[in-house]
Length: 418
Image: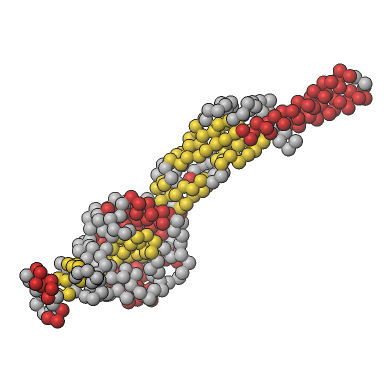
């Protein structure tokens, strides 16, 4: 009875009224009409209730990963089984506002045992793991007397990954980490660990000469360090909420996420081993060697699900790069946070930083001499870091190009003052 439409309820009320009048006036013909009018909506409700369970559906995401601002599609396949007739079907698929308007479809006659394919576009505006669904169907009978709602499909997972920029070039000396240029890894023999050796240089301690390698190569070779060299690049992403400003896709955090993703993909495709870590050294994504599509997906999925951190400052008691070269994408950081970041970095390790001039993301840019980001850049330069300052609207390839040219400590302002 709860599935009766306004038309069905009116028809049922008219039948009851006709039956009362037939009883009062003792009119049998009117009573027959009243019985028919009452039985019709009840019979149709029973029929629609039975036919609604024969409807099936499936949902396909094309593709399952979509970039922010990209285009995707959702395909719905609807079919009907059984022999009972069906009326109009109103379909409504639930999607979050970040994917676009909620789609609705009306199928007047659903074919039997033959699926009907429906498609609608999605254009995400925010990264994240979005839930598409549930798909609800409102089934009506051919007479429009009753309707029933049913959930056909639950939720499907759509990953909205950050948008990435195409970068060119590499930082000068990229990939050398904390090791010595020209060092060689040799295996000393069965059961012995690898040894890092390089050519003898004037002033080297003769006690570090590796005589076995010297005899094998015919020239003096010395051991580099007892600590093994770990090549590759570590990208540090500062995703603290307190370090960024702005809302939605125009927030400084989204710019930092997109830039970090672009760096990792670019270096990985260039053959570098890349680790992505948070501002506290937590590994967000790592590649075991040559990267590839699997690493790209792992990286982008990790960044899609990344949420702003609640910590106020950087607190770490170790080198986040573990001796590798480091590229840090930083928001607003305090003086104490700068000391935490630089305290454990070896002086010989290559360290680069992209500082976001956060006030420019809110239109509150200060004069060059009063900008806190300049003080932060000066502290990092004093610690031997190469620094690039980025403002809102700065093209990422331009920032990366300037970073690649940053060899000696020094900063460059990209994009001018906002």
